[in-house]
Image 1 (tube, rainbow, N blue to C red):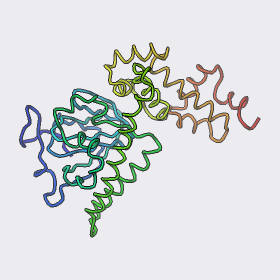
Image 2: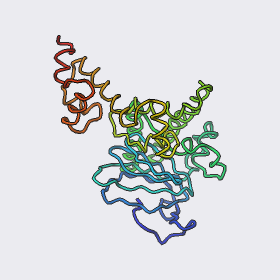
Image 3: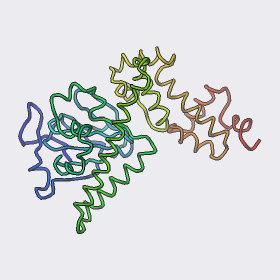
Image 4: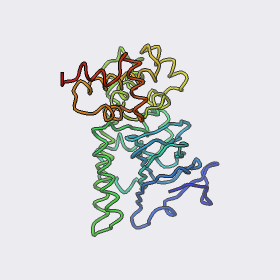
Length: 308
């Protein structure tokens, strides 16, 4: 894990790390988990690919001039020679998985997917002609997160135990992960074609879909701006223009509506529901719910719960 400066070769004015120094020559691959409230990487690049996946919490990731608060399910494919950095956010916990490898390791397994994955694994000046959001960042929804995290755990187990054939097993699982990324990228690229007449609304629609899929997690406004590929101030204006609500109010309403649905089902306690829909403190959940509905969650449950 690179956490400070380097005496290695430089690419421009930022540290440049080489696989010959960072990875094993016989099997140029490495995986590790990292979590530190003191993490503050310098902007750097490397001649190998790095996959960054957020397991829990939130942290900051800067890449190609964009700064994003990232959370569980976010994955970045950092191609060779692309500058980026990770840093902790004060008072916020996080854990990330970092996977380093040279592209040729999985070249054979990924031939059928080369048109989509090659731009991610092999840096080219042509990349700048592709919208940034389709280059290196992807978010896996809840349904895919468990599968992705199991693949990463399997890879890490093989890497640490190093039983006979561990290299082959790692490459199979790494290929599975990248193929899953390929599938999600293709799906994302198909979305605008479905409703060409509404092309101008797609960025905000994508953000709304993200909120509906991830309301239980922290969703900073900067994250929405990144998904829409807009500057935060402009995104804030556009979001309110399109939805009639501020970004924070929209997220809150989605959470409260989901909470109301769960309360009506009457299968969880009020405390469980509050945490399940994204509130970190019960008092905040109760206060927000009452402001939105006019009654407390408990009163709502007495009136509309299935026990009535």
